[in-house]
Each structure stands twice: as C-alpha cells, then as structure tokens.
Amino acid sequence: MLTLTWSGAAFAQSASAGAEIYEENCATCHGERLRPTGAAPDLKKLTADRKDFFEKMVNDGKGQMPAWGGVITDEQREAIWAYIRSRAG
Image 1 (tube, rainbow, N blue to C red):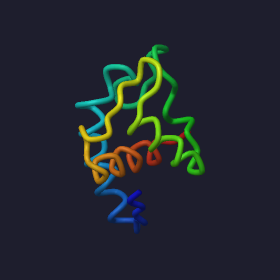
Image 2: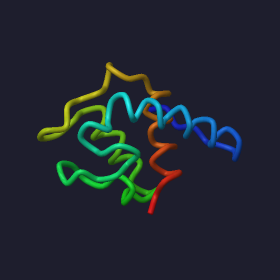
Image 3: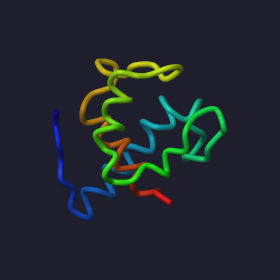
Image 4: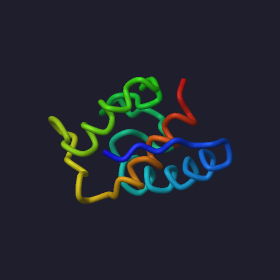
C-alpha cells in the first residue's frame, strides 16, 4: 500500500488533480463536486481515519461499487482522497 504525506502546497495540487479524476470516474454515482445524489454514500463524511476503508472500497469495490484497483493508479487514488479530504464536512 502506498501512503503519501502531503505538505500544504502539495496537498492543494493533489486535491486539484483529484478533482479532475473524481469528475471523470466517480461523479456519476457520488455526485458532481461531491454533492451526494442519494445513490451512493456521501464521501464528504469520510473522516481522515477512514482512509484504509476508502482504499479498500476503491480497490476492491462492494455491492454496486465497481473495483477500481488496476484501473486507476495508486497516485490517482491518493489524489481522489486528497480531493475528498479537502472538501470534508
């Protein structure tokens, strides 16, 4: 498992990249700009301590959530996580 630590500028850059990746791959179910659609969990409610859960769900999928492991890179997944954390409620 790849774990990255972000400084302020690097985090902002990663979150920006993550926003683009999210919009391309996740927004259909999880809502444009993380606005929940009711069809999937509200990702803004994922707390920082749920990162392992997030990684497992993205990589392995569950229920209607498809497995993205091997489809997106670890770096892309990390960028999506940075984006989610940047908009956490």
